Amino acid sequence: MALEGGCRWVQLRMKDAPAEEVLRIGREIEKLCREYGAKFILDDHVELVRELNADGVHLGKLDTPVAEARRILGPEYLIGATANTFEDIERGAGQGADYIGLGPFRLSPVLGLEGYRTIMERCRNAGIALPVVAIGGITAADVEDILATGVTGIALSGALLQAENTLEETQRIIKIINRIKQ
Image (cartoon, rainbow, N blue to C red; front, side, top):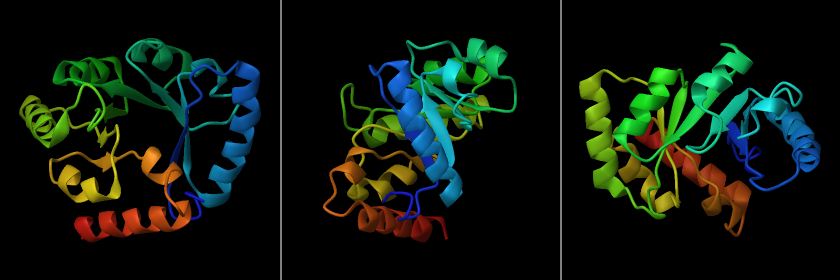
């Protein structure tokens, strides 16, 4: 429903699932992403990216280091890195990340709007121009204020999964984003 609603990046995140289950679900997600023209990002599982024909991998702070994933996957795959601080962004950028997932916005430890503003200013001052995507407890009501901090985009899961109608909520959020970016 999120893809039908206009979502164009999907991350498959199955933290404690066995590889066989990630492969089974991943094959279904990959087909759907191709059908809708969406990027398919696998969380954590560098070793399954090629097998699932994913566009890349997103790595948490305790997962495979970005530099190691880059060595394994090469330049043709997207690699995202989770960050909670400016120093995390510097590290991810230095190791070759293509984008940063920065947060959490609302979950613990809370960055909030001021945290995003401060970190994005430090990125600009340091000449770090990687796309930064806000993560962590974001709802439709937060989108406008978060994008005003200078982040490139937002990642949502709970706001879509818990919505009464995922398709309509996705469309509503994309309209907000498009209005802001005009």
